[in-house]
Image 1 (cartoon, helix red, strand yellow):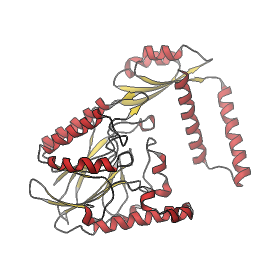
Image 2 (image 1 turned 180 degrees about the vertical axis):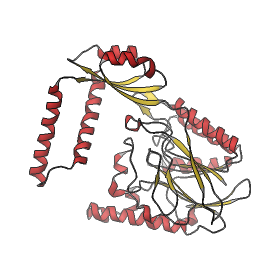
Image 3 (image 1 turned 90 degrees about the vertical axis):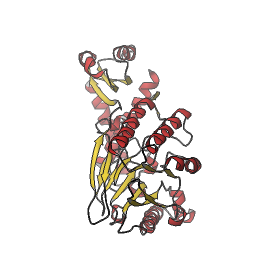
Image 4 (image 1 turned 120 degrees about the vertical axis):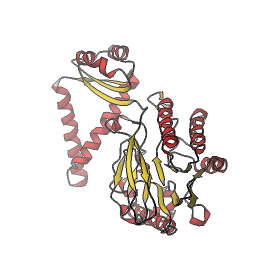
Amino acid sequence: MKIVHTSDWHAGRIWKGLNRLDELAACLDQIAAYVEREAVDLLLVTGDVFDSGAPAARAERLVFQFFRRVGETGAQSVVIAGNHDSPDRFEAWGTLTELIQVRAIGRPKRAQDGGVLELTTKGGERAVIAAIPFASQRWLVNAVELARGDDVAMKSYSEKLSRLIASLCQKFRSDTVNLLCLHTHLEGAIKAGSERQVHVGEDWAALPATLPANAHYIALGHLHQPQSVAAPSPAFYAGSPLQLDFGEADQEKSFVVVEAQPRPIPARIRRVPYIGGRRLLKFTGTFQELEQRAPEIKENAWLRVVVRVDQYDPELNRRVRSLLPNAVSVDQEARSPLRESAQQQRDDSYEAFHLHRYGRPPSAELMRELNALRERAEAVEGEREA
């Protein structure tokens, strides 16, 4: 059985005033062509299909055209909702998408209510798929547990999600390809920085050790950085097709191809790089250095530009965007050592506050996070001024 795993499309996302739907369309065209060319049996999409619960019609049209094209090959698709998706909309259009061999699951369910799917491929191979869309804290943890404090609620969330996973995976059989689709954050996985932070705090994470040991493959969604996770069975985040923020600028995006058959033969897993998304690049230097590099960075990329200046230049934003129309963020940074001195003063002030309040200095990780937030706030302020 040949399987393709993709995730976190965020169709309809508006980023810095840009609608990147054309880039996503190129990536989806690549996947559809791969399904056609390689005779793929099953497509797994693990959530955040759309960027919001009420996506624009153009985004929905792109997604539905993609699934129709995949369905015409005879391949079947299983799609679960992510935290950006509307569970109600998933359940609603799922009643129609079954006509093109797409099963859409909007909410976590018991096995007998649709939480486990049994499919037979066009080649006669059988798969059992445990499908768990995004389960919010409110859905899994009751008000009493939340009122008792974060530690109790977070432990309860992890335990209940683990029991749900175990319950659904009991349906796995020795004569089928067994798959788990899950949209969540697993403890220890690497965040890209563009995910909604409220849903990826370490304390609300599921534990990799509680994942099933008898799955041929565990398809994960929610985190945008492609990565494998140390778990009892092969577990992979497909990641997003596009670099969605400058925090993902160095990531190589890819979808996952899995070839599996009933045990005892392990699945063969490999990644295929996406084609079609524009890179996100960060440039820091003087305007003269920017002019020298302009020919190599002005094409097929979105740019964040930080220009080092001796004094504030009110015309710099216009000059940079005239030179590089693909610059979506332009900031100025003083070359004077006074900037470094001011930064150190801010750090010292916060360290003194933390020591007074908590009786210990802040950790290096906390200071990095604080400075990253400060830089992001300064970048947003710079864009407003521009």
